[in-house]
Length: 245
Image (cartoon, rainbow, N blue to C red):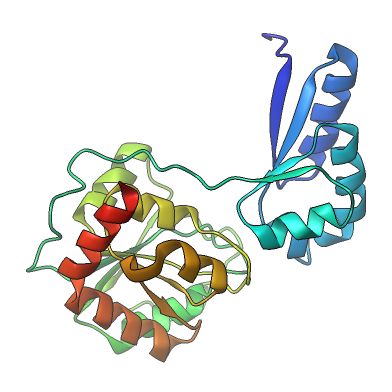
């Protein structure tokens, strides 16, 4: 409608890049791809990687969140920039997590790389920890899985409801089984000054450092990381506030 001269196209989904490139050709606009980890490594989107790179070369290139992802595209001659998100720091991020509560918030998309089943099993083994999982289980991954009383599945929530959850959280949990996948929920934990439990990968360790606790994707390890983060909430909170600043 506004006939922009510059476009940023987020992938996935791959077909969006085709639509944006057609527009760019017609309007002589500049097109850049905002490429997440999924199109580069997942079984769903990796078969399109060659065509994705070819289309990006017809535009001005791509933006990614880490060097590992940049290397994949640069190997295919795509002009690529590594750019971390800069979280918008929320008012009240200095507030200490409630010392009387043990609330872990897991923002989920129910994508295949998220070990949701392991999270539920970890919660079952730790009934003293309240776990809130957001997002829609459109793929039915939790069907047939016993959901313990300390787990709340709240579905897709509004932005204001989501921010209320982050403000109430003692810790935020964001997990992936992909090696080079940055976590948006980690940025959001930083924005709210909340301790983070996330996956034990190089990129996540390198970025969040002492402001997070890191875990493998199995129930016992996840539960242990929750306990450690909750017990060390004050130190992790202060480290996350400092990192955000």
